[in-house]
Structure formats: C-alpha cells, structure tokens
Length: 247
Image 1 (cartoon, helix red, strand yellow):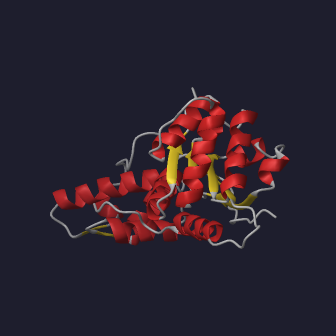
Image 2: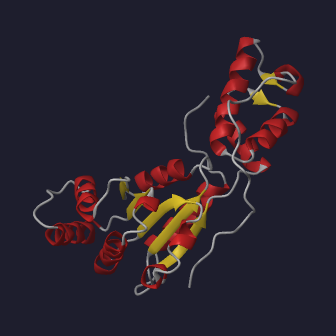
C-alpha cells in the first residue's frame, strides 16, 4: 500500500473551501467550519491542507482553558507565551497578522461550550483577518448555531460525507499496488458504510491477501465469502449534503 493523501470528494471540497477563505475579497468574513462523523477522513484531510498552506494547526483537548488554548497556539506559532491571556492574545494576533497564516483548531467540540474560547477565536479572526477554521464532529454546526456573532463570520461550511463507490475506486487505484476488481471493491464499500478509515484498512488487507497468493489482482472469489475486511462495525451512514456557503 502506498502512503499518500488521495483527492476524494471530501478532500476536494475542503481544498476548495480553504482556497476560497484565503482568497476572499476584503471585508468578507473568513471563518470556516469542517465537520462530520468519525472515520470520514476529517483530521487527515485537514492536516494535509494545513501543511499545504502553512497553516497554524492546534488540537483542542478536554482540559483546555482559555490560557491553555493561547499557550497551544503560541507554541504552534513558535512565540513565547507570556503573562496574562490578554498579553498572549496580543502576541498571537501580531504573529498571525505578520505571517498571514490560517489557523485551524481541530477537536473544536471541546471548546464550543466556552464563550471565552470561542469569542477569543472570533477576536483573533477579526483582528488579523486570517482564516480561522473550526474542525469538529457531526452536530457541531447545531451546537454553535445560537452564537450569532460567531456563525455570522463562517463563510465556508464543509461537511465530510460518507465515501461513495467512486471514492472507493479512487482510493483503490491510487493506494493499492495490486488491482482490486470491481465486485470485491463494491463488497468492501458496502461493509465500510463509506468510512474512509475502514476502506483503507480493508484495502490493506485485500492487498496483503493478493500478495500472499502471488497475484497481481484479486476479486470477490479470491477474497472469500466469509472473510472480514476489518474488525468492528462501520459507522451509521448519514444522508448526503453539499458544501454550503453560509451568508
């Protein structure tokens, strides 16, 4: 198996939204929201895009306080965290404004209930004009809907969706070093319920099976009727939705 980011539809939507934030006209709000259920590739996609555009990327934790959040952002920006939260905010704003780096906050579910942390991120956006993107689980969009000052600044809303069969084909072609025939790939896709994580696990096991048999390709018969692609259950599928621009 090759190790690389594959441009499935979720990643393509994320890239388009990120570029729209970076290139937006002056005066247009520049906050973003990326959300979806576990296994759909959010963190992998966001990490890839953050590296691609040299963004500052931090991961929120359950123990975060406003001070802990500022210190984490300061470390990512390689600046010395000093004094009070107000002083750290000043330093972070200055560093982001000078570097023009976007800021991504993963696992943002941990801080959504804290008005001080969410409003501080809004302040960072307002004072620097750099994109500030929150990344969270499915339902985070509903949890922040009552924070009108925050949601009014979200101009790109990217919902990560279950991978479709075309995505599974793209993953197989770009990651596997053996040919996975359509009947086997369709079987894997059904059992994965669109989880990119489980698709990759399944494709890895399929490739290992083909190599152990000395084959350059493998189909459903070669895999076996009762063999498992992965351990555990796939996530419940969610209905499709499209990338939305919140106005």
